[in-house]
Image (cartoon, rainbow, N blue to C red):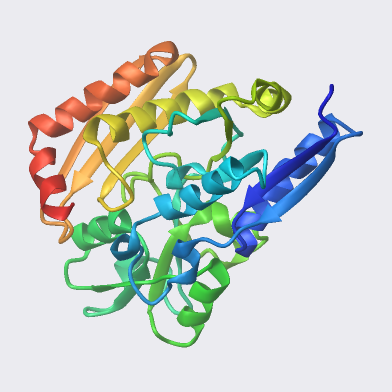
Amino acid sequence: MSITHLRIATRRSPLAVWQAEHVADRLRARYPDLNVELVRLSTRGDEITDRPLMAVGGKALFVKALEEGMLAGKADIAVHSMKDVPAVVPEAFRLPVILAREDPFDAVVSRRYTDIAELPVGGCVGTASLRRECQIRARRPDLAVESLRGNVQTRLGKLDAGQFDAIVLAASGLRRLGMAEQITRVMPPEESLPAVGQGALGIECRADDPEVAALIQGLDDTDTHDRVAAERAVNSRLEGSCHVPLAAYAQLEGDELWLRGLVASRDGRRVLRAEGRSPRSAGPALGHAVAEDLLAQGAGEILAEIE
C-alpha cells in the first residue's frame, strides 16, 4: 500500500465526528501503518440553526461542504450519513462504500409519555424532518408539530427545557452517541417509514483517486449497500431531496429485497404507499418500479406542491 496518510473530512457536530472516528478506527485496524487524520469543516447547514433546514438549502449543504473540501485538497475522503446524500452524486466523486447499517428507524424521546399515541390533544412534537412530520400528522392530526434544529444534544436540551412534549429523531444517532437509554420508543416502519439510507454511513472519495477507492473498499457491507441502492433508486426516480416527505426502506429476506416507499402531503392528509419485491441484484430496478407506482398514485403532484 503506497498511501501512508489519509484525511477524512467531517462536520464538527459530535455525531459527525463520531462517525468519522468510527471509519478512522476501522481503517486503522485494517491498515496498522496508516496515519488517519480528521479534518473538521464548517458547513452552512450547521451554522444556520434558527430556520428550518429546507429553508436554507437542505441537508445537501452538509455534503457539499465536505465535497468542496476534497476538491480543494483538504481531505481525501468524506463520511456521510446516507440519508443526507443527494440522489445523484456529482461526476467528480464516487460513493464506493456503505458501511453496515445501524438501527434504521425513528425514535420517540419524551420525559412524560411513552409514545406519540399517548400525547394529549394539542401536544407538541419536535422534529427536523418533513418525512417524520407528515407521518406524525397522519396518525395524530390534532398535534402541533414544530421544527427542531441543532445537534442531538441541543435537541434533547430543548425537550428538557419543556419546549416539546416529545421529539422524534433517528435512533441510530442516539445509539452511536451512547444515548440509547434516552429512547422512549422505537417506531416501527408501519408507523414511521425511515428516510432513504437512514442508519447507514457512506464514504465518498474523488472519482480521479482510484487508489483511495481501493483502500476503503474493504469497509463496504454488501447487504447494506444493496438495500440502500434500492432505496436511493426511489429517490432518484422521484427526483426527491430532504425537502420532501419521501421515505423508502428495503429489507433483505434471503436473497430477495422487500422495498417499501411513501410520499405524503405535509399535513398528512394524503399518504401514498407502494411496495415491491425482487432479487437483490435488481434493487435499482425495484426502486424505480416502486417510484413509478407512487407517481401513478399522484406523488408528482404532492412533491411539486412542496418543492
